[in-house]
Image 1 (cartoon, helix red, strand yellow):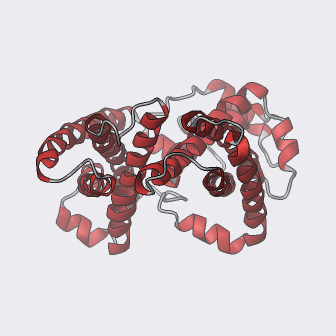
Image 2: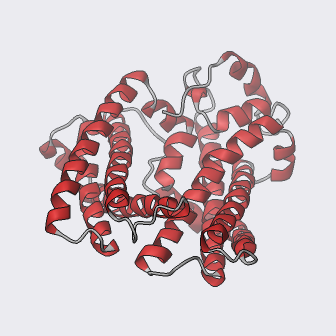
Length: 359
């Protein structure tokens, strides 16, 4: 789900996909696949055993894969022959497999785990959760694939983007800054592992899972925020930059994308354990391992987003008032009036800008 964070956290991408005309078209792009996915569910329940988790995930994955390609084409505003000529096979393969199939499975597991926590287990009442897993995953995939297609369209038209949300920049970062990234990842492994123990004293399976989820969400989000500052100003102390930021702004962005995506990833882990692994609950060992992986991933992603923000600052330092609508980092930078590296100079302009919606 790194592409989702990049599309909202990085100002250049956020501005491109939250323009009013784009958002209006995106609503329709999300609505239609939802209706189609409902029809697919109604048909599939008579043809295949959707009560089996692997079958459900396979159907959800297939629907999401087709949805991703079609939604990308709408965002791309081009015919398939043009797309085949101008877009690489690697890009289209990544879109179909990662944004479609894998992302669709992740979202389905997220839905199933969330419903299990509130007492609506797919294994006991399969129809409702199965339907929601297919529909919700397809609409979310359609939204993101459409936005990626729109970004690609603007790129072809000559509007440059320093970061494309396909993970290539993340791989380059890991290769060039392995020591720094590795340190944050190790901290994440330790913190997440400890938070996985938070449900150890709770006997009830669902309550124990809820306690584990809460601990990993809170500290995973906090570590992602700290790592973001570490990537944003690698030559300075991330703690000093954090201290210069208003508490209200820190709380706001600790929640999104920090806690929101830490919870999302851990719910996906829970879905794998409960429905693919057929476990009755989140055993302590599984919670420790899952929490360690999730928190380490959030630290890595936070550092990466900070680094890409730094790249945008260095190569495109003059930001338009529209660019300042980015809902994540611009608010932080606007409150960091005394931070090194030119952040203070942006404050006056930010005070005049309006913060946009997350779209």
